Image (cartoon, rainbow, N blue to C red; front, side, top):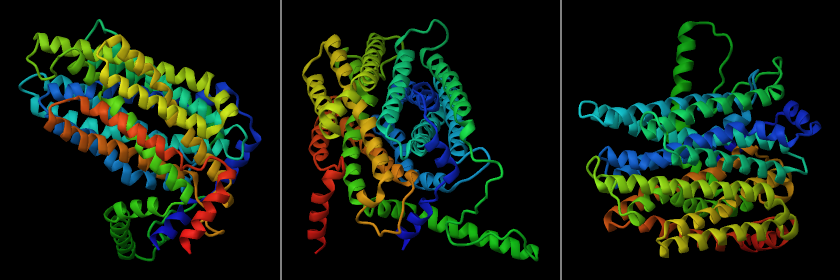
Length: 511
């Protein structure tokens, strides 16, 4: 019963926005401006999470404690992103269906960046160590959560605009391109030596300013697509409890409000993990297969992105993050982190160039399946090479080529979800004919896999690495997970031609 109710709530079409989107041809420049906030999100997340592991270790956190801090945000996101997607499908205000959530999450992210900046400054002194560590932990969790959950309404907005269009691959290629561009800018901010202030604080401050500018660019680009001011308003009720406009008495008002609040708390908070797990487990078969492949691939990508600079600082440069201040080990570690940041910068530049210049041609020539598998295979090869080579220049070359796999992970699954959603009758054959889904709910399922992969890395692998005392474990996991994702990619549905065989096997299993 919970499953059917959540699906009905998830699909609330926005005919006015969809009609305008179908009648509008978006230029490449316009799509870039629409996705500008995505670029800013990636800049903020890249800068923060390049420096956050070293900052936490320098502040005195153990490897396992650092893993918990980095894992709580994705864990919360895993259980709330589906609800955010469903809310954005249903929400209507005069300034737009998705924009309300985009602005709210942008405000939260800005506050969390400030918390990281001030927490790092306070943790460097004995008097403010406790407050600084608390701000770092809180800021890291909230920043991780908001920077990732904010992508859901951004991606759903793009899905709304491109739905029914023949250029969905181009639109999501631009989405992936600006995502990689944001990573390039973020890693550039971490790699350069800032002449004023502390390196970490200066880079985070510059990222905050850039993020706010990107938010302004996106808001100006989508302002004409906002829902009309006089559009009919709807009342959202997760628990089937209505909120009447007028009451005969104040006690009646208070009783109804309190009852609704407790019902909401029970159904949407206490039962939220069960609801999310059921939503993913009972999702359409094609979406479930894509979810599995995407979860494994994102676990590999997260392990590389979060800990590559840390790996270079400890393994290649033989530095120590918790070494005494101004010691040789600390200087070597800091230099290794900076060199690792240059490798991640090359990684993002290669990803951006590939997705903007080559990926569409490869898709047209070889199809989505071959292109997707090629990206995952190249990522796995680069991870295995990273394990056996300790020359920093070769490592950064392998990091650059691994950007091809990252570009594939950020574009093709999103394009497939848009294709599934545009023809639900064909792809969602295992659903009742009268049961429809909103694209926010579909992307919510995909993002659950994204968060699940990050949670596994942060909570499990950090404890394993601390027990083993070898940072090689992060890269080894990335290599093995990318191989497993390559195998799972063979089971993903890429076009209508894959449906008859899948449907036959589904009917046989059902019988």
